Length: 138
Image (spheres, one colour):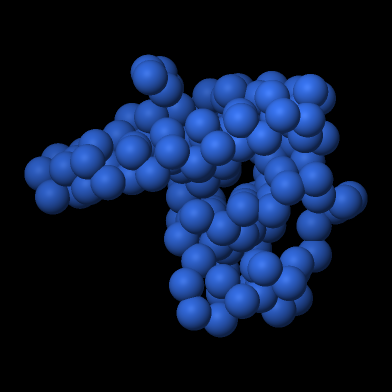
């Protein structure tokens, strides 16, 4: 499946795009992860016969998954949370460049998670340890 401009490899900064290891990571690891999760979310939407109004991605970093979701589901509000401001800023700028008005970012840790409105679906692709535990409780 072609993610077009939402492909994680296209989201690499200029410096990272010149680094063969980063390009390989985006192409061989990050892209398959995003595609896998996107397919799962789309299957959930198909099973419920209506789109999600709001998806929250906990620990979403550079917004690779959030951007793919917002691109594929323009009627769904996608909120990406993380504690890493530079990563969120990069994702926010990329979403702005792509014209994605349905993606927002929130700088927060999972213990003080505060997003606008209820979430229909909470995802945490890269959660491990206590982040996974907290995401399951959200």
